[in-house]
Image (cartoon, rainbow, N blue to C red; front, top):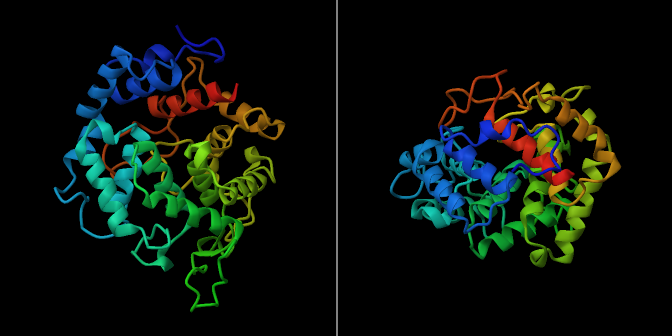
Length: 337
């Protein structure tokens, strides 16, 4: 039976159809809350890893643990290691289900993480940027990667938000400093004309939301509070965050998509804030209404932003009802209520 705390549950039978094993698995786990050892969920989890997009992505992995070419794995977009792992995490892939996933996580940590905890597009500290850091910290936690090096990655991410112990860009001899892209505290980003970037903030806060409470140091708690203050400094439904290249917010904020890479939607801001227990905050009310109002008469959400032909797999036709986006929205509303 569908939980009674979700408005308009008519899409659930659609999500549970056998033709989409990945969606079915996540719906059973995240919407119906079946226990991890439930036989139906266990069977669905196995099937999701053996068929569909998870299996398709893993089939393309090199035996060395990377996709396309060796190295930090940022390029080529969106087929290389970084994007494959982000996709796998959003698809519900788990290290415990396939040894190749663990091998890929280890490869990524070996080649894209610096000694001070920065995930980097080129393997050096200067290649760090909030959206990449947040995406990979979230993805590795979500996948079930248990590597002590992640502690350093989360520590750097927290310091980069608060500024604690991080020297300015100009202090080029400092061991820990800001760089051209990750250029200052409070999500300042060179890619956003050195203004705070809400796309990056959403990724960082989503990652913090998945970090177990017992691992949240005072530094991390301070970073979380600063991030929440930033994301709620405007009505998230307005997406009125600093835009270094335009007087208006990007229209992509209102296009819900799957998978989600560095371009971010309002739904992901809500995912981050609800994950941090701000679902009942009145400042999020307009955002939750905006999300709920995008349902069609059958309780489904359309795919509005996609990467057709640009990543592993096909996740649906734009402007059509989409199981992956519907799963994202229902999962969010369930947690928020």
